[in-house]
Image 1 (cartoon, rainbow, N blue to C red):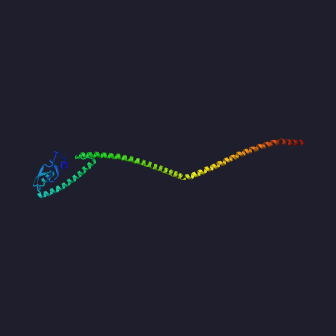
Image 2 (cartoon, one colour; image 1 turned 30 degrees about the vertical axis):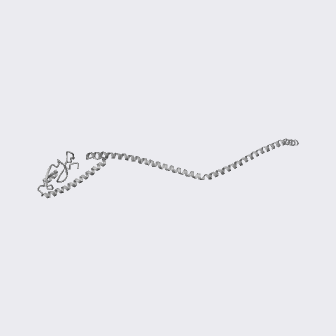
Image 3 (tube, rainbow, N blue to C red; image 1 turned 90 degrees about the horizontal axis):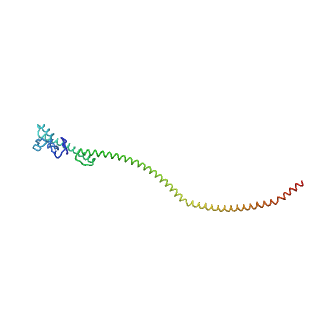
Length: 233
């Protein structure tokens, strides 16, 4: 218990704690300056102001009845006190977790928790922005990955085509060799044809010269025959 439940002032070295012998609550000296005769102790004991007022107005009642009523009040107050203490401990533990620091001063702990909470919210907003940037970068990476995958597939197709060409290369090489042999044969035939053509051209040239010479020799006799024919006429 850190404060008096009646005046709510904090306990300290100058403000000491006291127990009400009637209800059992922890109160300060200012709120427990009265004493009453209590049958349970068979003498006068320190009581809180609340119990003093209650018992002062109830002196006419039998002692046993007063004692039982006080016990009921005590039990009720103790239950409420335990509940409040549990709530306080839970709240203090929660604030300690939020602030990350342990402090006996509740207002200071609340202030530290508020500051830590604001910092946490700001950090969460920054992390959300970073998350959005990461998502955008991830989308860009996925797009680039798909592009690279398409390029890899194209390369794989080219490799398969080249492998197929390599498998067919022996056949193509055989065909190439056959074409080269055919080309050589055709070249040889062409050379022969050229040689025959040259021979024929030479033979044709000599034949043309002979025919021209014969024609030149027979031309005067023909002219003479023509003249004779004209004279007869």
